[in-house]
Amino acid sequence: METLNKKYNIAPTKDGFFGNYGGQFLPEGLKQEFEHIYEEFLKYKDDAEFNEELDYLLKNYAGRPSPVYFARNLSAKYGSEIYLKREDLNHTGAHKINHSLGEALLAKKMGKKKLIAETGAGQHGVAIATAAALMGLECDIYMGEVDIEKEKPNVFRMKILGANIVSVKSGTRTLKEAVDEAFIAYSKEYETAMYAIGSAVGPHPFPMIIEHFQSVIGREARAQFMEQTGRLPDYVAACVGGGSNAIGLFSGFLEDTEVQIFGVEPLGKGTNLGQNAASMTYGKDGIIHGFKCRVLQDEQGNAANAYSIASGLDYPGVGPKHCYLNDIGRVKYDVISDEEAVNAFYDLSETEGIIPALESSHAVAYGIKLAKENKGKKILVNLSGRGDKDIQYVLENYPKF
Image (cartoon, rainbow, N blue to C red; front, top):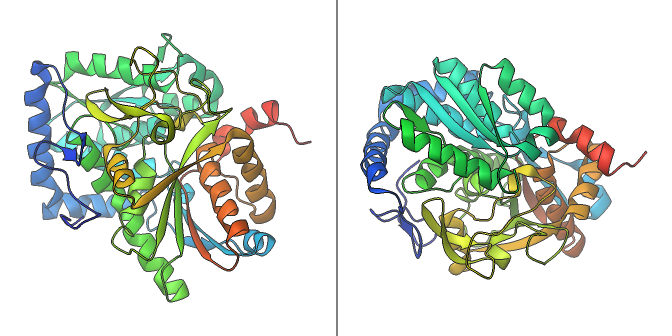
């Protein structure tokens, strides 16, 4: 990815801030290591040999480029042209393989022996376990006890790939606590391990690292859409938890001001604290996991419990660049409920023969909403992952048959 310093697609400051958000709030012992990661990333991101190896893996191992698909049946049903960026077709079934290969390759170049990661829905965990196996690295994956039960297929995949799964039993036993425990473990092993963050969050330089490796989505999607339609989309939409798939797609369109961009947060069961994970919509400025962003907070100012039917979205914070894009009005952040996401899950499955992840179902639901309210438009939705992992949960809790 080129270094961009335009109005919308800005790079962070040297201190890691996108406007008022980001930065690096770390114990003194870790600051030097994060500075080392930053220096190594800057060295390798423009290194010809590194990029040649990564490009080879993205093409011949992960299966890129992922196609843009015109959802003909869904479009006919709702009166607008809906296109899907098919990240679900990547090896491991989601966009997570993009940054996981990049992080694992960077860790190997740095001489690290282990990857430490957190996961919610398990897609990042599977992708990191896959990349670790490929690179010959050890791998510890921290996952909340609730998510382990909910996402069993991905847990089994991680184990088969050789990862050590650490069950997190504190707090809500979901993604936030998994991040807490993974970060504690990393702080004890940082000399030989690297924390492979699973979204565009965390202390500087991780938000920019994740964006760099995920920007392939936006570059591909823009070129593919132009090739297929001869123009840019009217609307672009992606689900936002931490925000990795979204920032990857958005990066390709931020300077195209005629394109309206939507980040779709999980409204969950409602607007009350603890019922959703819509950090941008209902959060306040705060610090979580070593960086500043919009955070869901309780009355004491602590990070509140977040909830979403989609395990990969139930994080109480959000990536700092998303916060900046919200502040300047370039991206509109809106919400989709559990019920709307489940309806989209079934709708896409039945009309197009594509079973989406519950995370991606939020974006699909918003694409449908845009189509119904704005007839005749061209809408590009990031289908960030496939729904194999969610089938049992949906059928047991939201049966349709």
